[in-house]
Length: 259
Image (cartoon, rainbow, N blue to C red; front, side, top):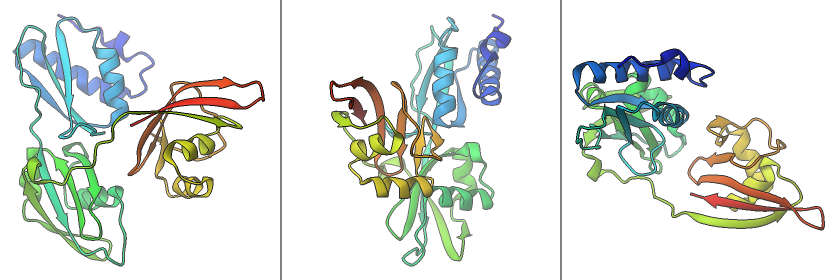
């Protein structure tokens, strides 16, 4: 089977990442061996699952180590092959004293990169109070980081590899449907209502780079949203705009799905 690469890559939002997954698909077709990708981020995963599902001889599954994972590994296999869709992923404990120097998941990621971990070998990372963080990594990264020490700014950190069951995984939120009436469909208005924070706190989250729209950082809170748009706020889950209807009083009745 020859894959229609040009067709699948035409107007792709993430052409390089998608091309790498097509290389993986061609390998699976040649060897008949189910194969896992490296970790991919959520925007690439969503585009890949959307575009590559048209390949009739192949099936795709994703696993990031926990149900709400943003960064996942993709399993490609032939449709007629029974496979186990659990990715080879291990847990990572990152210890350090950050009582006087709070950190973010991006800080943890940068520190692991500086210790030689490849970006594609790192899954989700999260902060655990002031003692460091935890994360999900590939077996390759596990071998590299096991017992290693490094630095995050002025703080020394130590890495230890754990089984996923030993981690304190991020809390999973139940789906919740919300309805609110707002003066506009602006990002700051909808984020404030959906996440239960004041407008000023939402603006602070935007300035800190913690609020994203369809996975891209939000730069301006006054942008209007449209149905299907999704907001992600670090540590507080995500919102999807399901509908927005103008009321008789020229306000907007907004329906949201919070995860």
